[in-house]
Length: 484
Image (cartoon, rainbow, N blue to C red):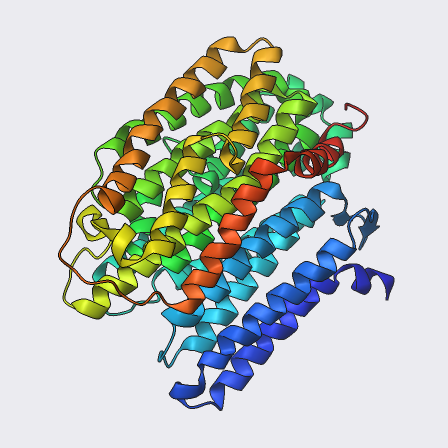
């Protein structure tokens, strides 16, 4: 019974997801708006239960699940992103006859992410990964009449299936060499992996598998098309939630289980981090689709977070963990702001082929002032402007990189951050400094509420970083016990 109480957040989401699915079967299309409110309340309840259990430490089900500061931190990241997703989706799914399926898939994807955060066994981690992935494959292609949405779903499914195969292949080698899939036990029995070439093969397969999940170059090819083609609210869940699932899983596998092979994978992550952040920022400069621009920006952000795998000091790990929370607010908010603009454009002209084109942001400061101001805060935070979550996270991560002696890596990251300001500022330029004859429009309340929550999160971490930094440091202790 105690084990079940520790899983109260996950159980709450599961019950909510099933309730939404069953209730939706008996509701007329015009009344299905209530499903979004039920889903949001369920996520809020799960978030409250997770927050109240902070500080709890426990091992469950034969040490296959772990409740600790790291898992609790990332659960809150996933639940915050899910809350933004469900609130914004209330307006997006208005009048859609399949609303119950949409919200249920979002909730079960979140459950999968939460179990990845708690996983203490490679098989539990893999199954939880697939639970989240299968749900998001369907969400990416939810607009069945939209060719881009179907293409996004298909590419995401094919690449996701490949990454799952690579992960499972790598896990099988780890199991064969150590005789266990328990993450701490692998670390204790990793001597054979160090001296056997199979250990190197396993590391390569796992890096490739996680590289697809995190969207590190050259394993990124699915991300831009998937983020652009998916419904914008789904893109927020993918970029701000699903990607963080890959990061926390990689933390557990490489830093805990395979720390004996640190020399092998640390160099690879250094190369991937530099190539990913540089490629993402350079390609983002040329984009005219805001969603595609944000997708390439998301690659760059993944490159920054990957620096934590290179530096490997407690402060760097806490910086990477804090960056995951900050990025959740920033990137989810940016995609939801884009969703509000897309909704406006399609309301005016349903035949528009590229509703997320940069030209549609022209004069947005006058047409949709709350959305424009929110988007400005998000993009400046992503660029690392002071007094925002992005600045706080980058300061901790970059300064720890310099302290550890990786000055060259920090310089590359800072230069990339400066480059990103160009294309972020371009969005602001279109919203405030380019004229438009279009009239002011009413901003949908669900989008506005989600944007305000995200803005509060971005500014709270920027203005009051101490509690968040301390929380991230406590989470990092799980990866390097006694190291802080």
